[in-house]
Image (cartoon, rainbow, N blue to C red; front, side, top):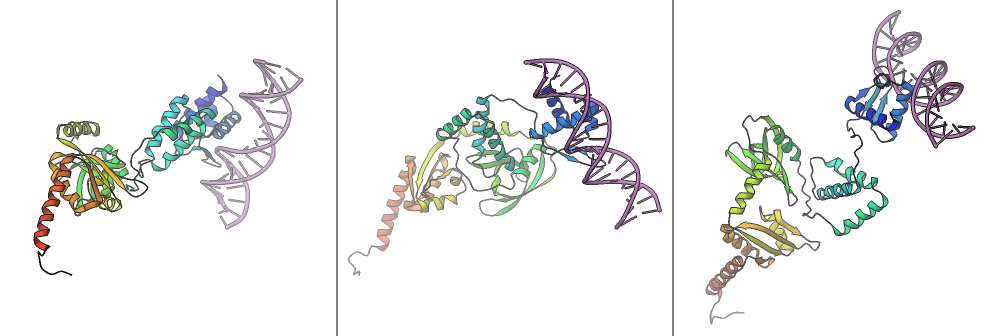
Length: 325
DNA sequence: GGCGTTCCTTTGCACCAGGG
DNA sequence: CCCTGGTGCAAAGGAACGCC
């Protein structure tokens, strides 16, 4: 058996073991303790997270974060993983925060000189864009875990007007537009509602939920079908700084708000046709801070409103013929 | 608490075998 | 003949344990 295959065998063996002595390995692989010691030295210098404890009950230990035995990626594969991973960096919160950064770094370091150049080039011309968010979602991990274990969660949720206590069974979490969403079965309302993870101020896992629940993939598909069937209109607005400030406070628009470096923003999203008048009313109060590019229906409503308002103001405040200063 | 014992790793050295 | 990989042995030292 070649040395390298033996090293990998040992690597896989100790990956399963987590704690062992050199003697044990020597017996297992039929070589001397001295030789095992050298193997382990080599593995260790290759980056296998080993440490030793001397003395009684001592021996070798694997650190918690076990490394996988070597996986060979082609350079193309490595680059694709690298970029897929880059896309995640836009999210302030990930269920696997700390590790996320070291992965890209490791991959990048392992690439050959040419591949690094290629990545650098691609970086300049290829991006997975999603709006950068600075909201961190501390409830992300508990909600994700609860959805995997099918547990009921008590969460303090910030809804439109108040902080409410909710009992829900999360069915999963997904990211969209830089936000984390969690569809969950609401035990009071007895149906699945969509929650924004960053609005869950706390999430405490309670008992197991024995009811069978729809899974995330099925739910997303169902939602998608439903949305398609609704009469939806594209909304496209531009905002100045003040408009951006207003928009940030809006429960729905803010999720699609994109702010540029000048502090000005745009929102592009699909809305339900039936809500057009509501949006028109809202934008009316924002005045010149919002410019509606589409749909035209809203533009018309705004004009109509403004004209009516102007007429009303004239009637009320224009003092025909009376003296003014 | 001090001390010796036991069980473990670490390190160094001498030696052997096979391949280029 | 040298290099590499493997073995055996011995000395040193850390840590836990038991005993006084």
